[in-house]
Amino acid sequence: MTTADVRGIAIPTGHLIGGAWVSSPETFETRSPMDWGTVLAEVSRGDAATADAAVAAAQDGFTGWSAFTPAERAEVLRRLADLIEEHNDDIALIETIDMGFRHESMRERLVARGAVNFRTYADIIERGGEAGEAEQWDAKNTQHTVLRMPAGAAVVITPWNAPFMLATWKLAPALASGNSVIFKPAEWSPLTAAMLAELTTQAGFPPGAFNLVQGIGAEVGAALVADDRVRRISFTGSPETARHIGKAAAENLVPFTAELGGKGPLMVFADADLDLAVKRAAEQYEDSGQVCLAGTRLLVEESIADEFRARLEAATAAHVLGDPLDDDTSIAPVVHPDHLDNIDGFVRRAEAAGDNVVRGGHKVDGSMHFELTLIEPASNDSEIVQREVFGPVLTIQTFAGEAEAIELANSTSYGLSALIFTRSRDRAERVGRGVRAGIIWVNTFLVRDLEAPFGGAGLSGIGREGGRYALEFHSDLKTLIIADGTTTDP
Image (cartoon, rainbow, N blue to C red; front, side, top):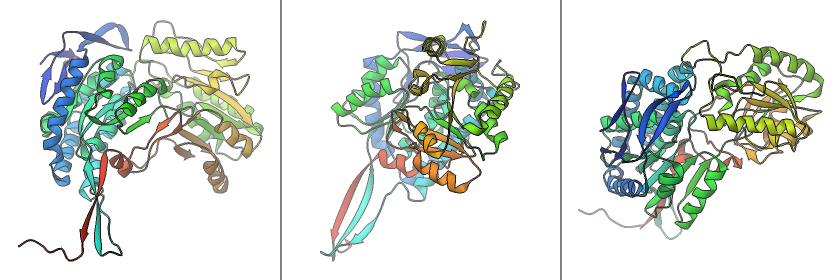
């Protein structure tokens, strides 16, 4: 097994296929946004042959893993959760170095959430949520029992932001359902995926139940999703990539779910707790805006707009752009130079289109940071309003009343999340029902029961994850019909 030494931690750089670590002759580099000049590791670059071997291994592994009872699978999932907690500090450190998110957030919240994801699905299947049984007697005196069947080999493709937590969020229901998985992480942040794969072998997954394939999405990822032996595909990433995956899934009649980001509105009404609304608005810059759920379109009632702007500027100025390993840092660097250029391109085009850059708007010399940026668009049709930037760039617009606020909130092609700030429960209900989004927070943010459905509308994706909704996706249903009077064999 080839490994890379990162801060004294040995990390596998190959693929885990059928319970064994294997390497590819070609590699790709992963670098840290903390210091782009330093190569962290040379990681195996999978190809079509790698994908073929991984799917074959997953098919073999499915036979053994799907035969585990729900209680047996739950036991393995809990062992994996224990191991994640045991290695929390190492995983958090490597994720910060590889991807750039703040170490405090990784250490205290996101890695720990990975363990919770596996425990949540262990609990669900152990209490019967995986079985899916429903019985009834019909007019012809037969008993109908509806059963869930594990679907087969599932391909799970995850994004580069918060990669460990988002991987566990998708892998947990696939494995809990009894499916084997082929996990393809993003090439911009691949290291903690290898750490997770190593822990699955210690947790007791049978060979082939969990497979890791590293590489470039357009190469090995494309080969994986086009394989007709794959029975489920779960993807988080961009709409552009999802379209390619969706075509491959359709060709093989494979169920496909996709979470594709958002352009969430953050709506502030005149009766809101303004201190709270401003605090939450300034928080949307955290992690350099590389969060799909962020409320990046600030919609503020006209009567409080001037005061809101002044308070927001003070709250924004208090942020600290710096080293993500320093707990005093509140804004992490951008993940990759290509993405930094992408963010800059959005702002340059906004300026050229006549949008008003109120603050920020430039790369920070000598680092991978982009200035915290606020833009007043010339029109609601402006690109900066309508397309996801995925960076520390917010827009601000005003509205006269609820109807206009809802109209603006629903005016993009996305529909993942929204934030509403008001002291009125009635308004919260009216506006919350009127806004088209998969999840809507009122006077709070990033709070969610893990068994609740998660997903979006429009360009924000198809399908739902979370709780039994994810289990339903990863399962096939069958109905067992037994005639009345059938006796038990002696």
